[in-house]
Image (cartoon, rainbow, N blue to C red; front, top):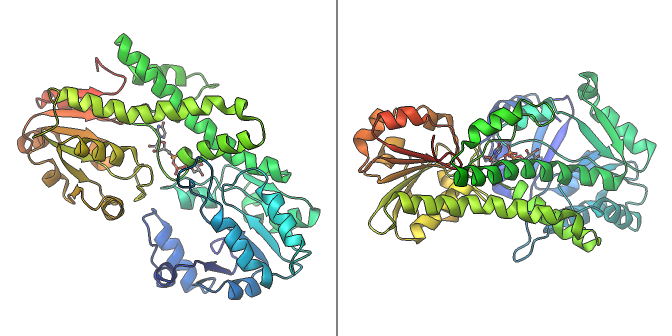
Length: 419
Ligand code: UDX
């Protein structure tokens, strides 16, 4: 918002994060965000604070961007942060203010917040729901040039304020859709469910290809030329992870159940199952490649982040496979260009190696789990010199089978038994 020209205060309850941000540093890895942050702090448009009172008194529009992780031991979303921040903000709101929810929430949340605020000192405050569609790794680009803007509102005034807020993006012809509260809330989970379904569809095809001796990458390319299908989000492999798709489809099923519409989303259970099976199938394939036994074998995992260009390890397929193989008795080394610190915080007892060639030293099997560019650029002939036995499993279907075979490796990819 500061880059769009507004004066902005960012609030967090974590003083460390606030201090880091105020110093011009992003406390996680996101390409291009450091520059935008520094530029706007220097320009005096952006500052950070832990004081919600300060923010409330300063701002006219209040974006709620807190997390809605999966509730421990349940499928549904943990809404503590959303309702906590609303409760903290409410006493300081001015009747002319607009509260805009960006968090991914169960449908009905905006209405609940609207009703809550109606009964407090903040009466008169407007509420809107404006789902966030940015992808990690492309956050800056997706924010400054979004595919679309969706705003769920209940009044013309709320719509008018948001048109003003997003004027620079509307000017560059970003589609601006005005809906009611529940539609705006549902757009987000529907979009993520569709993307998850697309990935699980191609991974289901990978399972059939595996059984039939076919090649899922060629199959994806061929169906992707049909513009009704499209070629994006059709990369078969270890499947989806991260802080959004897995927990969003689960929370969506849970919410549909509460609304009596659980039958409609039964297929998402299958989408989730197919996705989780990718991880167990990779472990099975690894065991088979190593002659049926992990004990005494060394396995190197290339990648800990759930996707490239991110240091996020939440629900990371690659890290999950690493831990499963380690639990099964192998010596596992994990490499990642950016995510090792986060991985070590979650799994302090795993072995991490910052230098990729050192990580590969002595390996009996390499598993390519996250498609960072640097793994694609590895020279198989150089890798061959440092490993113990030459086996590679390509969990992301992007390494060149011929190049790896030429260097003496056995190459296996999920859904491409003959590649
Ligand atoms: C997702 C949505 O794309 C974004 O719109 C929403 O705002 C948040 O959730 P993100 O979690 O950053 O974004 O990752 P995304 O790029 O969607 O990838 C999700 C996962 O799917 C990654 O683990 C990725 O490796 C995997 N994936 C993606 C595949 O396995 N195959 C594909 O073809 C595409």
